[in-house]
View 1 (tube, rainbow, N blue to C red):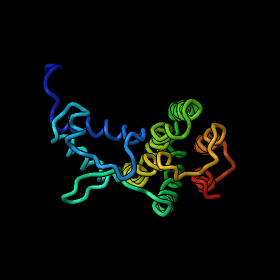
View 2 (spheres, rainbow, N blue to C red):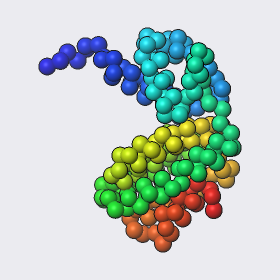
View 3 (cartoon, rainbow, N blue to C red):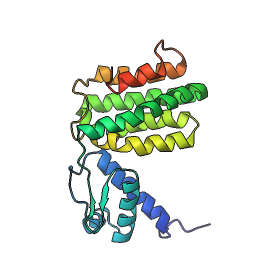
View 4 (tube, rainbow, N blue to C red):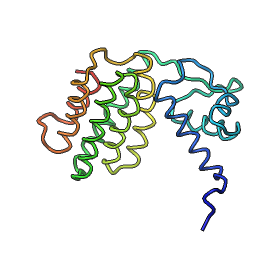
Length: 212
C-alpha cells in the first residue's frame, strides 16, 4: 500500500495546478491582458515554477491563456468578434451533443442536470452573472458527456472554454440575464433531453446562445 503522504507525482501535480488555475480563471480572478507570471503563480499556489509552467501550457492548449514566445503567458482580451466566432463554431457542435444526449439519457443523468441547473440559478441569485461561469460550464459539460461521444465532448470543451471563462467576466454576453432566464435556458435543454419539449435541439441552442 502506498504511503498517503508520499509526494505528488509530477503528472498529478501538473493536473492539480491546472485545475486550480482553471478554477481561478473561471472565477474571474485575473483581468483581460493580465500577465500570468509563473513565479508569482508558483508563490500563490505554493509549488515550484515547473508545474505552473506546464499547467499554463496545458491551459494555452485549451484557449484559456495566451502563450507568447519569449513573452510568457497572459489572459486573452476577447472582443465581440471573438465571441461571434466562438458561437459560430459552438452552435452546430452543441446541437449534435444535445441530440445525442437525448438518445443516451438516463433518469440519473436527468436528476444530475436538475441539480446543476439549480446550482447555477442559485449562484446567479446570490452574486449575479459574474460567478456563473463555473456552474454554467458544469451543466453544459454534463450534457456533452451524456452524448457518449468523447471526440465531440473534447471539441466542445476546446471551443467553448474561453466562452465560459471570459464572456461573463468581460461583459460580452447578453445583457438581459435574470434568474428566470437562466432557469428557462437550461430547463429547455433538460426538457429536450427528456423528450418533453416541442422545440428542436437547434431551437434550444439558438435560444440559449441568444441568437433568436
